[in-house]
Image 1 (cartoon, rainbow, N blue to C red):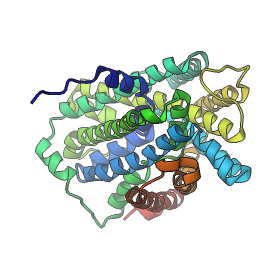
Image 2 (image 1 turned 30 degrees about the vertical axis):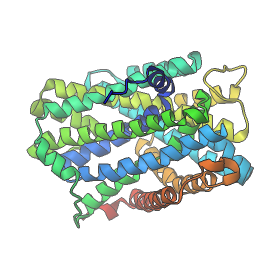
Image 3 (image 1 turned 90 degrees about the vertical axis):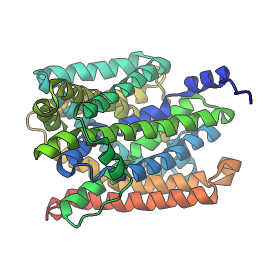
Length: 417
């Protein structure tokens, strides 16, 4: 039998469309996500790696739906919500997204500052340089250039895979734990489980991915490549998450080291897995934080401008899309100033953003499912019954878990015991 040769045109088309899915899913492993996975590995070993399978399924289901809506309608999520549900709900939705993403941006700059402090660089130097760099990239760049740089940033996450390898984990045990669900009755374990699954899908991700697909002008006949990009992004992201848990589980958990954040994990790895593992972990944290500090304000600017009917897009400028660029600039400046201001209540800001995200998520997911099943809007590309079953189940689970996260954030004492 003659083997079919790879189709060069198909491969080149996939490379041309590659980007939005991998970039969006990768940013899900931001400073907060890395801290969560680091603590999971350090405090619970490999007993939580099984959650990465439902996490991957949830990511694929939700991200595929917004990508499909962007390709079929040629409109962004904010546009569709305004057209189908009216200006008022869109305004409140986007206002909440703006508040949540400001808090998230502050968290990313805090992560960037913490990572650079490991290398002896003061936050009063690192934060302004980081803020100027991400501002200049988007304001002075084109969509094609910005996307290429974001894709390069996404590849740097694999420093965590190298850190995990340097920890010399028992890979057979890791593989077994990956397919063996564990449930324990203690509060700390349950809260970490909820944290890992419940923080997987953030509201901003849905708006950004659909906007990126629309700006890239992906056509319906090319959608299979876009879907492959989305699925690949979800798998890559959770391979990175697995690497972080394994790196910390093989070293910190074994040594009984307790940590409070990702910076602690990077520092603690040095005597246990070697200086280079520690450096790679810190480089990954710095990259993830600055990467997310670029994407979150960008996602917010896209969403607000599209929802309000204002011009938006990286390929425009301050003259043709003033609201877009001033909003992007304002979020970066505010995020950087709050991290540098000595009296800024950073923990309160981060808690508030998590609560707002939790309140916002159910509305975004339900709006998405209403839109994706609107035959007038989507035609033959509506969800199948099977996909609807998976999508609604994912939505309900995410809402329940996020509700738990909100409650625990407001009443932290509930997570003890």
